[in-house]
Length: 118
Image (cartoon, rainbow, N blue to C red):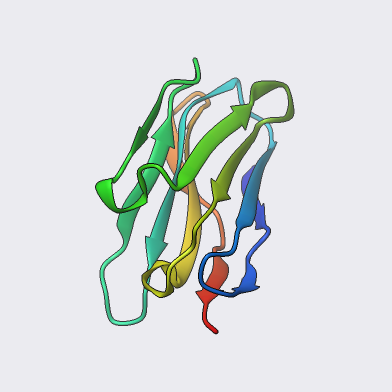
């Protein structure tokens, strides 16, 4: 009954910017932590950024100072603003959220492709 829908991926030049969005829909009580992960071909999925229900963020070192995570609790949506993009940022970006139901669990979005290339 819960779905995470991502949008905003695409092709950008090095140094460019992109804004990802992920909206949760369905029947649930509330959403706790939300975040973004990414996975490049042949590599493991890695954490990019997380944000608590109160808006406290945390980032992995490679994106600190370049990416900003935020959320709109009224819209059940999390965002990732990506600036100064580098070719090594190229990956499929996945939304992740801990959603409170009768049994609380972690959900994943379908992923959105981000490609940084000249």
